[in-house]
Image (cartoon, each protein chain N blue to C red):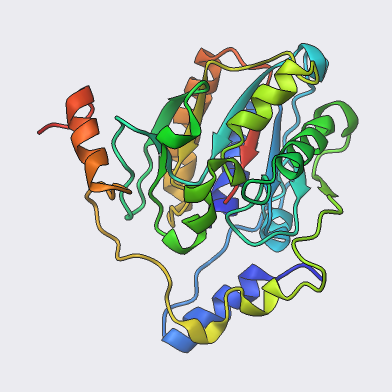
Length: 130
Length: 160
């Protein structure tokens, strides 16, 4: 869903003169969304710009992706980076299995703070009414 | 062989007895804006669809939240938080936000001269908005205004 949203945003920005480049890890949704420029990283969702605490991997992905602004000349290009999450692709077997049920949260309309203290911080900053 | 998410999600919804979701399938060619500056001179903007927010800001909610957050690009990693309808993908970003909000990577690339500069503010949205109409009419225009305010030459959009 995120990839679809970002592709729609990319097309809107681009149509209004801002060059965009989408980095994502769901190739089929990138293909369907046809963003002007896209880079595919074959990692589990949640890791489009790298493995946790692996700064070389993170900077390498962002550097390779941004190079697309200079290099890509054809609308709809999707560059596939060679980065691999693990040696044998085993993570895919665990990803999105149809028998896992609905992993989404209930569609609640109140702010879902990561930590209870974040709510107090938002009230203290004036962003949220007490 | 890259994982096919649309097929997997379609099958999951079928097993759960849900109505099928109609995915967006672009049928026209993408628009194109040629970069005005070489990357080494460009002021680069950033969007992450991960539901990131900075400490002191209001978290996203789970029901087609179409708001955006403006996050100072100098925000330290330990003040980045996340709220997103698919919380299961946030385990690693909550340990290391760089997985999905590459502020440190962009700062490093600016320091080494690969890019000209990072915009003063970067942006987030909660990408799990099921209404494509609301993405087009609410999320995308808000982000266009925000990127224009930041005078970016190009925008890196990170999808979760």
